[in-house]
Image 1 (cartoon, helix red, strand yellow):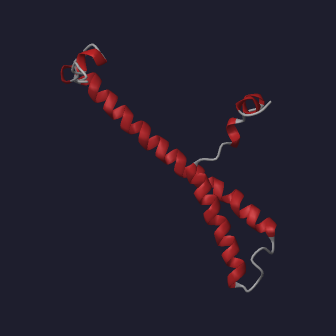
Image 2 (cartoon, helix red, strand yellow; image 1 turned 180 degrees about the horizontal axis):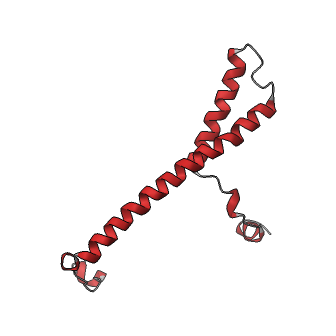
Image 3 (cartoon, rainbow, N blue to C red; image 1 turned 45 degrees about the vertical axis):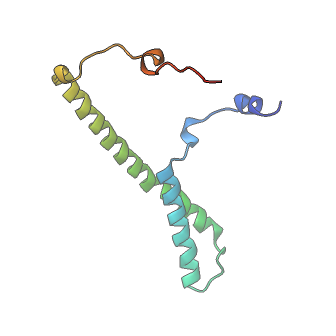
Length: 110
């Protein structure tokens, strides 16, 4: 088993997915923890459990930001769909165009 066959057999856990904002907030909280050590003139990697706890605490604000963006995006889609449903004359249903109707005929010269 090599290549994509391995990834097909691996289990997939939806809860382990980290979004962009969660990753940014984890990095920010970890950087704050490391900089706290540097300000107090301690070695950068002392108290690794504190860094891990800071990274885990950073997931929460990242999740809140994700939920905020999801609500905002859903509200925007809802407003657009509501407008389309209330003004159907502005959005006529038409048959989809085919490539043969759009492209011009082409005759190569040799």
